[in-house]
Image (cartoon, protein in one colour):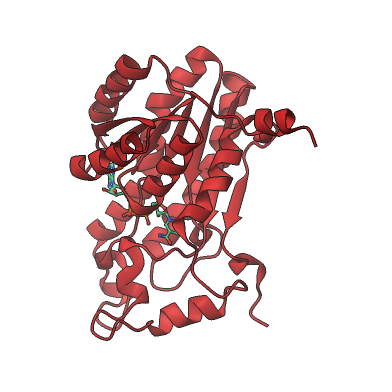
Length: 277
Ligand SMILES: NC(=O)c1ccc[n+]([C@@H]2O[C@H](COP(=O)([O-])OP(=O)(O)OC[C@H]3O[C@@H](n4cnc5c(N)ncnc54)[C@H](O)[C@@H]3O)[C@@H](O)[C@H]2O)c1
């Protein structure tokens, strides 16, 4: 094997990657991993503190990072973030849309039936997960259209392909993210450049802040019935570990994925492949 060929295939040295939700668990882990591989990272997060923490961790490890407080649902906030990123790095090569999540108020359960779900809570989950990808794709995708190259990578979910019980707004929003990923892939190449690629990663179950209340009983610290069911339905018999998303993100951003476009790649320990028997 030619090591130079392998290095070229997965080379992301120096590319500028904007990561929304980069202060969160999965976005933060991917950000640190990509920075270790040489990418220059702009962390955009509504939590300034969380964005700074990820950027500091990258810098402490010898990488290059900028933190920007930004609301992905506010176009002006995104435009200001774009100015800051351009002032620091001069260009944007990739956008990783990682801001997203569910809300307890939009989750059905013994105390909250579907019939009583608050419409505002439902809409806020649709907004964050769908519009929170559409708006950054407009703002940063425009730069890619101007420069005739770029990569957009959305964090969807296996819930977008196989709806999970109890989280109807999240399921619907992630289903829309899968659909929008395919639409945007076709649109960007048809209208602007065949050097712009758009894909998504569909993570399976990773234990993080947004889903802990569903998977671990806060009183006993034991797995909930739902948590046990998830592990039982995952052929690899465990939750994912956030660093296990880095390789797929790196691959999709790198020249190794030069002909991968409009794809939604599951990273789920086999969850979607298993019919349950
Ligand atoms: N954790 C899982 O098992 C899992 C599985 C599949 C998909 N996902 C998806 O992965 C992505 C990251 O999830 P996570 O588990 O790391 O969640 P997380 O809550 O740790 O991270 C989300 C980040 O987004 C930020 N954010 C929220 N609203 C924002 C806004 N309006 N503008 C900018 N930033 C905002 C939060 O401050 C947070 O830092 C989400 O899209 C989530 O739906 C997670």
